[in-house]
Image (cartoon, rainbow, N blue to C red; front, side, top):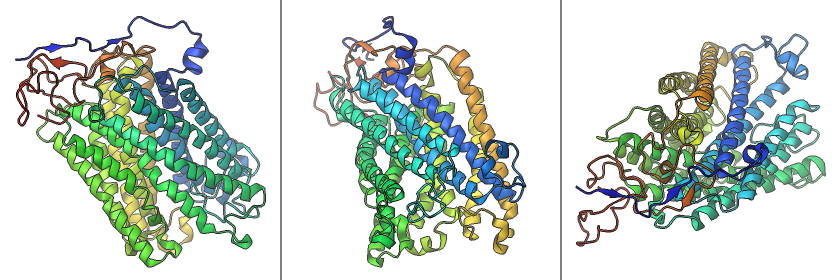
Length: 602
């Protein structure tokens, strides 16, 4: 059997620490790992805030007309004298919940955290290509979040035109939907767009230029591929949103009429611009999750990823098709039926590469040595719930079906199965998996498994019944369902959903406790506790500033688990190689003497 050598494999930084002040090292840091952790802490706080807004929404739906404890004191303008929530405040809750969850929680958790932390480590680089720009991207995102929060403190309250801010409601200063809070919503998203564009330029440049010797394109981990493709999507899509938001802000403040029909503008122009960004945004929120799931599932199955190249090409296909399906959000807008049919067909086609990835994850797990760690449980949960959301999305793409369920709670259920059951489950998988590398300590596996089990149960209890409520005709953003006779029969189901949502929120507090305890007092982590192949696990936990003294050399792909030529372990790090490798089938004699099979072989 072959032995393994690490000659010229690279030397990680172990004892070298730069003398820096606390502010320079942890606040205004240019170290990509610190910036990733900054995004993580900030985004988790915004996730908590978005969850609190969701509970207020569910309170109003489950108990319309009932006073809400404490909220009247915090937001006196939000309540009637009797303590009942005002409709205007309810509109703000719906708007800000969607905004914070999409723009300030899920997107920075997936891209800001994992792109910053993983890309340089996994490609064998010392840092991002532009460290100072990287620091600026975080502080721009942080400032954008504060500007959005300020909407709750200004006269007129936070934005209330929905998280999509459809014109003319969001554009006409005479409407109650336009307030200083709505203007702050626009300013915040412009600042956030600058942050995301700066980050995307950095990620793309780093992956192209800073890969270690031997790290060819098809030796990149799938997590890097997903983040690289996501950065390209963001770089192309976010300027569209920024331009549209600036036009909307001008309509609100300068008297322009881009989206006001009374002045020759087109309200539907806003929808086209928003969704031309908005549907690629869906894949900005799911492609990194797919990459994380691939890492976690391959490691947890102790098998090479099934069909590595097909996974890469599927992500490329998803990103391309994601740009040409935006019109399926607008089937009810009166578009030409022929155009609607083209959007319907392209939306159905996008299910093909998504299905390829799903079957590849199943192929990876098939007959694998499954390790039921918390990270792998969340990774498998991601696949299960994303399939449910994806399947509902397939027949929602059919125009006749969409006519019936458009703007109902069926759509709410669908997007939460994709973005909570999908993206957030993958985020939890990634946090549990890379937590030892981030903080040098371990989270509790027992508490983590409890967190997974309860999250899986309460998530389905909260969102699966929403399909039934939506099919029953309940429109989203309804303030008081008891006003409608046909909805009163579903009030019991709405109360059940609200109690389940409360349980889901409380389970999140279990994660918060495990996270904080692990970060401060958890068991010290080994350099490679999961016996993983990718380069970040070949550095100490946590990795030091600069990552490497000598940059590593990469000899093969990222998924050489259970390699047939390595007898003493079931993994082979990318910077290791067997001294002698038997040629694989189809290779000429001697072809395997200096390299091992590409990722996915064997």
